[in-house]
Length: 105
Ligand code: SF4
Image (cartoon, rainbow, N blue to C red; front, side, top):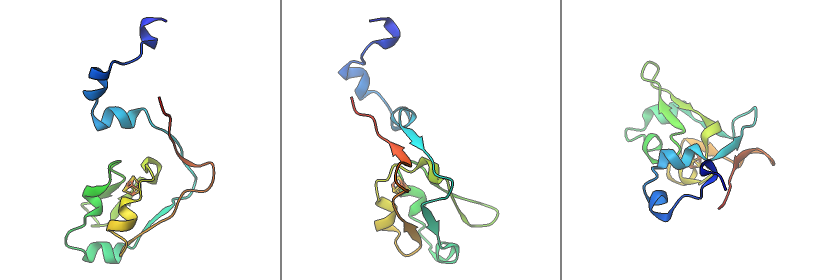
């Protein structure tokens, strides 16, 4: 086995950041978003929790318009936003064959 194919040690795995792990995730993005945000309700929400709860940083505030931008291609399909922000986030699974492609090992 060459050096660039070395299996990471348990210690080095523990030092990986979330960003390191997200870098290893593969996606097959659909052309259309599986996430819709009701912008009127989003703007009316003082807390805007969706900007903070997503582990993939899918949601971002547009400072100029006050709208919520959605990078649906980054979605890990954890379902957190669907539960926590159901009043303005409409989330469904991506169509079959699209979305996050998890690898284990
Ligand atoms: Fe983010 Fe999870 Fe919602 Fe996808 S399902 S957008 S990863 S919170």
